[in-house]
Image (cartoon, rainbow, N blue to C red; front, top):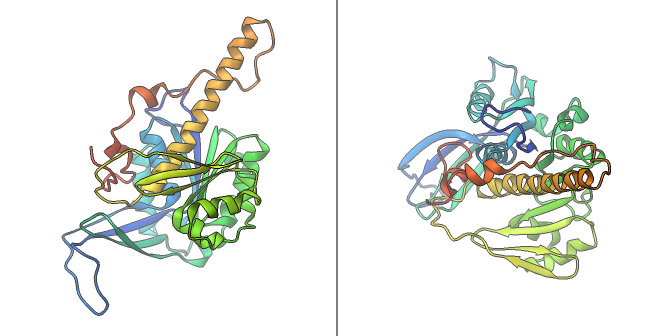
Amino acid sequence: MSSASAGGDARAILCAGIIVLDEVFRVDRFPQPDAKTQAQSFFIVNGGCAANAAVAVARLGGRAALAGPIGGPPGEDANGDRVLAALAREEVDCAGCQRLAGVPTALSAIFIAAHGDRMIVTHCDPRLAAATPADPASLVARADAVVADNRFPEFVRPICVAARARGLTVVLDADRPTQMSDELFRIATHVVFSSECLRATTGFDDLGAALAAMVGRTASFLAVTQGPRDVLWHDGAAIRQSPVFAVEAIDTLGAGDVFHGAFALALAVLRGRGRAQMHASGRQHGGPAPRRGRSLAGEKLKRGAPSSRQASAPCGRISVAGE
């Protein structure tokens, strides 16, 4: 995991999961059935939960790596070539991306209405979802934390298991509705749901009740994001609320992905601070320093963090918040 601009003590975050090429149409309003709508603008850009999270990590000063299945081989799947080239420009390490011969890269058509709401249709070849990582242990060997989405569970599960075996923080982006008994909920140290996923997974419309229903299923930290409203999280005894920043939304595409990437990086920075303090304390009192103690990362995150608009624009064209 390396980045040309990230400092040597920057936290290394592995993002695992889905990688997509997005075709984006800006419209005044969503098209009605059997109607034609003229787009005000159109552009093609990278997307996918894991890919967006990786770019957010890189723009926030972390060392970002990406692992996920993508179409191939090089030179034959043009969409995959385009995606990886764009990620390289964002200084994301894509060595963990697996090119699948004869398989097209996942593709989405996205409509963004004037008020920022979005409508997404995605085509994903079943062979992408069936792919598994060749060497999960090597993927997490230099990571300080892992963030994984659950769109490709067969691919991310072994990576999360390998990360936990190393004692790493594992943040699960619970984006795809699943079963409450899903093994990933128990493997991850932190599970952050989208409101749609939490409601569909638990069957509860009330997000507080839905979050409480998950408490008995896992010992992991549990939270749910709900767009511009407070983040809800469970402290083990009760539901808590954390306010979000008030911004002027340009569009909401990628907002949750940026949240997950930033959350994983923040956890890694805080954990690094704790290790640095333990290291200093051990040296002061003559005790042994932790084997993996490192100097504090995150100064770049504090000094050189991009604006909210930049941090929320993982693909270089799409923004989710105003300046």
